[in-house]
Image 1 (tube, rainbow, N blue to C red):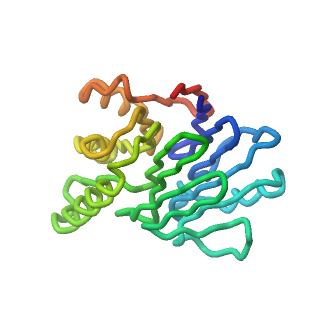
Image 2: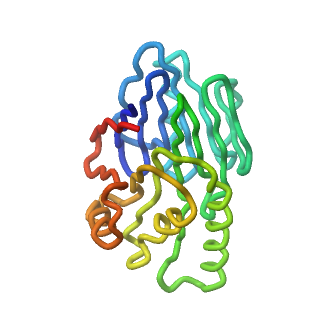
Length: 226
């Protein structure tokens, strides 16, 4: 069983039987880490809607915290912090993390922990902006597809992927492209800028209602059976 709490935007807190994971926190209420569970804190890149130095306050509250941060984030010398580039595998006795190059900033994470496989895209997406330069659009799309192919052999339990309404009619491409290549049991749309009707639109237009777990309220908690 996974206990997933939606904090805001692309920030989620995930609890397994033994471990807690916090992704891309910058504001909002973080659930308490139960005694005896290790906390891993992820930041996919330095953008202000995905990272805040406030995450380091958690070291004052919990003794077993480790930070897995994209290498584009300003360095702090601390043994509890690992800075990760793309295309590497980080592991310790509890967790294995594969990283992928984002076509925006930083990296995306594939996390294997306690028998679960979780994917958090950060800002990695098919950013098919209406009216953008074609050469740039082709570049970012090719990179997106190249990196997705590296993930195709994972059996993913939950994938957290941007569903950004600012992309207008191209809003869905990050998820639909992902599903053509990768295997996931559930999808959690994120990066919706509080316009949660885009999730319902996606379900209606692309009929993935059995796969989509919809979070539409900050602080919402869902128990997910895998």
